[in-house]
Length: 580
Image (cartoon, rainbow, N blue to C red):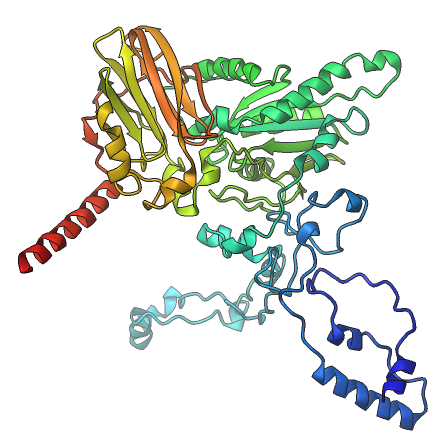
């Protein structure tokens, strides 16, 4: 038996690339299945050999889930230096998020299942009986009972289901399907299997190179988190490339320098009192401070309401020309995919919709979007850049929902004196340590789901022990406090000359900001977790609320639920003491 198998087996097995649909390592079963058929042997020997092979296949071990190939090629740009020139496995990309797709292991990223074919009369449309037949009493009763019938062949026959439209829908991975229909990731454990996207290797050399097609880079920045979502590293890289290659054309060198267009998204979340002229000027000054010195254009848009999208598309098409490359770059959850979908709606051409969800890191790979630009120009959606100094990178999915801003911001203003503090959930605390005025005004611009508390500074440690993770969320749960890190203090000295308008903002990356309004000088101590960026900037919104918040906890569902749980626990303890 062994001799027959040796004769049938090749002496040196050829190099074989395993398809993406099989992410497990080759085993005895796959090797046996790859053996050639025994058609060149005599009939009797061939029949015996085939029976032996079928017997061996029956007892061969099945693929082990733990023996998987490297996941480096599932997400582009995440390979080692030794594999830098190795092409990725030949699998299709998911048109929604850009990950390589596979159909073998549901626990791995990029899994998809081929939809079953529909019958021609699937979801066949129906129509009520013609009104002329209502004169018949039996027909009238039939209509009143709610029965419907399909159109008869005399009137053209029943309309067949739009199976072509159903089949033309692009196939997406299970992760995109879950995000589109349920707003959450189907398997969060699979996210940890993916390596970090290598932006410096995959995108940075292409957008900064002066040779080849011209690069148009869209800096997509969240208006509600301008400093936290601004791509500072990319801005410095492109600014240096522009300065270095500005005069290269005089030396007959490639000088196709990139064009930077700053796009401030989610404009609908800012109060309507903010004027576009003031916001435009404020954005240019702030972008200059953060490293984007030479901007080719600035656009204030709302992808949800299609504000300013048409002007953006026209300028992008003008700069890109017939052969340029357009790259949408920005932090995670800045709104790049939503913006590109809005550009496609504005143009009116047929395009594949990108997956958009309020989940950081929705896009996993580089996605080329067709149908937005004309000619040979290309538009690319890129994975969000991970900013570790944003507070969202340390929170769970449930905690991120509490700080996510989905509606127009409303001011919450406190009239506060020196020696008092304001807690913003369990993530940030502002202490008024010194003040030349009797009182100052602090306006909190953050998610309305975040509970606030104003009290004396001397009780801040007791607030952390008793209320963090309960009335003050996020973090959700008392154990999460130690997981977020150590609280550190940052000092800010703020001056102002008006009681009516705020002069300075204290912004925390990924959380929001506090506007300071006073006439005089004050010393603020801001406490956040170690590594979270907190900066002082000129005020974005000068208006403060007309009705001020009171001391204590703000009224919210989180506070009311925590209070009810606390009261029940207190009653149970008192009942046990009485019974004892």
